[in-house]
Image 1: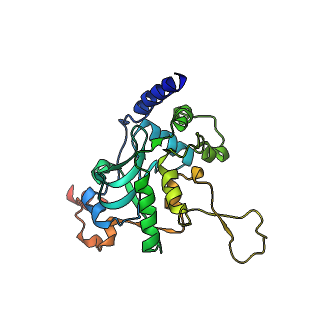
Image 2: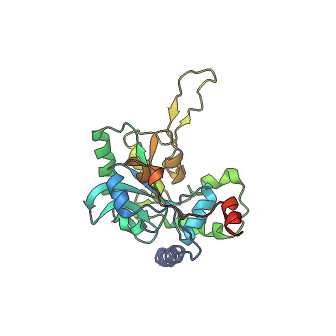
Image 3: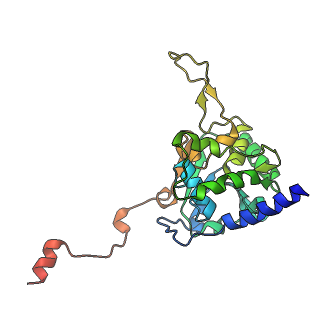
Length: 253
């Protein structure tokens, strides 16, 4: 009985947190057509969300990016992207869902075809899992204007939750998929690595500590910008002509 009550409260809260903000201003939106033309299977699409929960994630991670989705290509279960949604769990969605939001493409470098297929299969097999609602209750408190949380503790707050393998949040699910083939995102030096070691001894961080911005910061993911991938010539841009200050003064005489 208590679990059912908590689940009902979690669903209501999730619906509240997914409400869109009215003061969101997109600056450099890439059209769905451009995204489709430049995305490849295995890419991670970062999204600057405009919901209430997006504000909490942006605050906790000091980042523009509040959501991440994984591109599988084609139409898998009805969509080209697989994501963990707060209300509906892990699902496939269309790129069109993010037509009015700022986005960024992050591409794993050197990922083999076999490993890419393994990562894609991992994501596809996760469809139907539910979002970890314990994280929802934890994130709610950080919607305050200035929550009293020291910066050094904010990252670990995203790791709160049940740890139930049937539950997921957006960036941790993708991190798990890449870790299944031991592809690095932001690995850290092993604790026992001597200071004078010449080669980095990499240690995989726990997947629950990953945030959307980590794919942007990763030295192993290339940033792909559709506006310049197919050739960019600034001479071809159409500018609204404004007279220079000197010309304006001259014309006024």
